[in-house]
Length: 68
Image 1: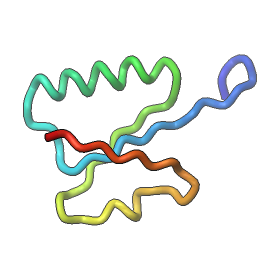
Image 2: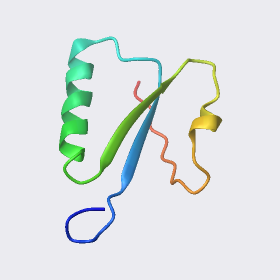
Image 3: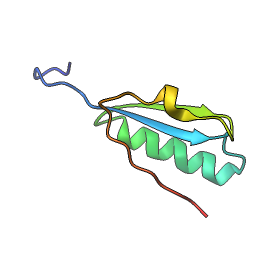
């Protein structure tokens, strides 16, 4: 709960495998830093080929993004 009595949203970022390129790691860290002022941010990594179904909460909103 924040100081004004409101609740903070939680954002969970699910990704397949870890980032390898340094510039992408820096971009992800900057994005998380900026988001953290407005919500709780956590980054969950799972292995390629594995199902993320166990990591997803039933009532969570899901948004799929693809970087190619």
